Length: 101
Image 1 (cartoon, helix red, strand yellow):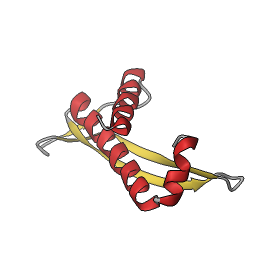
Image 2 (cartoon, rainbow, N blue to C red; image 1 turned 30 degrees about the horizontal axis):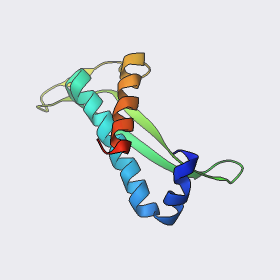
Image 3 (cartoon, rainbow, N blue to C red; image 1 turned 135 degrees about the vertical axis):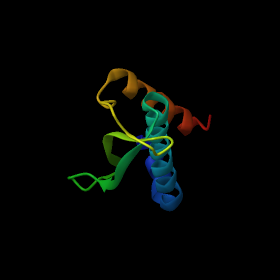
């Protein structure tokens, strides 16, 4: 989260943290559906402090390298993450969600 938004997260943590989780999860699931035609699995972990104990809100994520097809009939595998096109798409989707578009 940008430093400029941290005071907002400090004052309204439930709303901000919920928005963070929802937008990241929606972005990852959208990429899985559009690029792989599958529902990916993911685990997100919320961190609020750095090692130096300064307030720094962020998420870490583990994402499966595949998932169930959208009809839940088969498992589809692909190495989406770590590829520049998928990462660029994720950044663009997150930026759009942050702007409310």
